[in-house]
Amino acid sequence: MIRIENISKQNGKQIVFIEASAALQRGEKIGLVGPNGAGKTTLFRMITGQEQPDEGQVSVDRGVSIGYFSQDVGDMAGRSAVHEVVDGVGPVSALAAEMAELEAAMGDPSRADEMDDLIIRYGEVQGRFDELDGYALEGRAREILGGLGFSDEMMDGDVGGLSGGWKMRVALARILLMRPDAMLLDEPSNHLDLESLIWLENFLKGFDGAVLMTSHDREFMNRIVGKVIEIDGGSLTSYSGDYEFYRQQRAVAEAQQQAQFERQQAMLAKEIAFIERFKARASHAAQVQSRVKKLDKIEKVEPPKRQQTVRFEFQPAPRSGEDVATLKNVHKRYGSRTIYEGLDFQVRRRERWCVMGVNGAGKSTLLKLVAGASEPDEGTVSRGPSVRMGYFAQHAMELLDGDRTVLQSLEDSFPQAGQAPLRALAGCFGFSGDEIEKKCRVLSGGEKARLVMAKMLFDPPNFLVLDEPTNHLDIATKQMLVEALSRYEGAMLFVSHDRHFLAALSNRVLELTPEGLRTYGGGYTEYVESTGQEAPGLRN
Image (cartoon, rainbow, N blue to C red; front, side, top):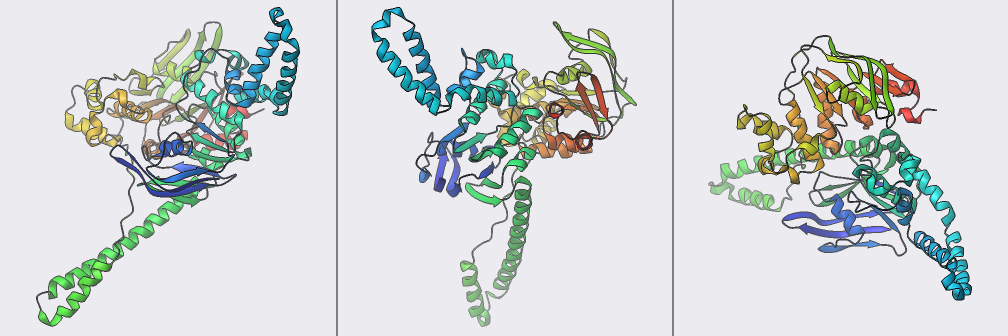
């Protein structure tokens, strides 16, 4: 259906692809993986014809429709979310617009002499609209938007008033409503809460077309894809199975390649030692010459490529007292909306609470109250006297000064620290070499998140409050963060829609419900087992 044949591509000085080949067949669901900057978005753009390879070709079978969801959603304003979604379907939306024009014309007394022609044309357009199931389209658009977390009010409101994350959901809904032969999805799991993520997961599982997608959510990938294509070092390598099976296959292949490389190196060393020992002896000249020729003909085995990974190294946090944070009889309202009424909650030493709840339940509000970023209307919020807190907020990345470099930003936060420890800190968080001189304004979302974390963890807190810390982080960086936090000995209170992160790090669950708080003594895995659902909004 879609074939990538011996493509080569260079962007400036960077070589993206070297004689790379792959294929997407009807009904296949493929995960596209590779380090940031490997060329995933470039590949999508070549499939859609927005870019061309320098050599080779990308071909799409005749008549195959493609829907492409990218992170660049463009300008949306002046129409409702429903109309914006329906408009993306193509012929149906054009027919709907023409029907509206014809209806207005038929109601215009000044065009009475055209009435017969208008009625005939209206009948033709309406018939075609009906053939394409246009009357059911709005209903399906509302169903999809509802699955992605939209309320009725948001569906009918002006898209221009929505945040960037909600506009992303509108753009995604457009593609889902199209139901093309092939969907190209670039990070569709970004900006979704857990309920919407699971809804999308089920939608894509039931979709009978082909899917090629990138995602930083390993659980999401695991449940959808049956094949993985890896971009690495300019080549495309296909692996059968889900993401976890790909990781296992890759590890086995790397181990085999490493063993082969080491065997060859040992053999080469032995041969070179023989040549060096006997090259001056006439009696061994023939043997030496033979081995020199042998070495010239040997095809060298390369060691496996090592993808750069970020290493988070926490300094030991100072020990806190038993009582870390206490909320007593807390009331909180926003305008006429009551978020909390008489809330009592406590975090104790070494507890790792993940906070669950539907959109609007007050998850971020709870974290703000605990962190001191918001004050209760009534009641008290207190932290233990030896508690040192680190707070990662969703808006923290927006507060970085765009004109400062990564190093300057760290120096601004820690003026007493020398350059050497700050450079070492930056290196731990993936800023090596010249990257430390990058201006904050040109950093990607993932790079900004890493910089904010570096600032938070330089002087280690013993209580971490984290609001969606894995947003914008790729799978490898997320895994490094999980491994580092699993060794962390302080208390944690966090919100995340990443199920792997939740399961790996929580040992307590706080669920916010309209009836009040529910607490669960085990972590997220135990919560799923006891409730039978992966998210509160999925329970009846």
